[in-house]
Amino acid sequence: MDSGTKKFSPLSSGTDAQAILTTVYEASLEKGYNPINQIVGYIITEDPTYITNHRNARNLICKLDRDELLCEMVKSYLGKDN
Image (cartoon, rainbow, N blue to C red; front, side, top):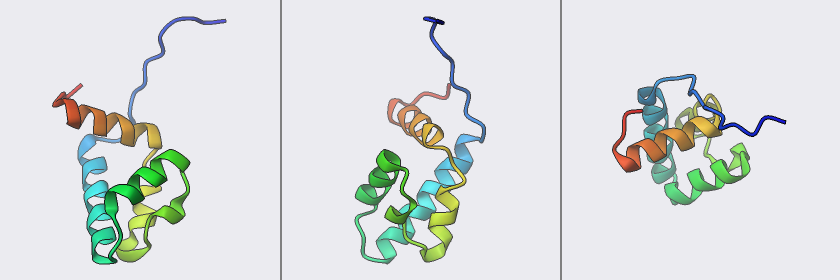
């Protein structure tokens, strides 16, 4: 059994994840939803029905892995590039 720390390497660039999250956020707002609650619901459950189809938001967010989303959000929150 390997007890070492595992390293996660995101597959796509942060810019792609940021652009997708921005589109999903704006699409949710336009439809009258609370975008933060919708995105968090998706990340916790990986259920795409939390995300509106408006502006192709659901298809876009499904292109990103949840681990990728969390990684990008933590980096952004902490102001770190790596």
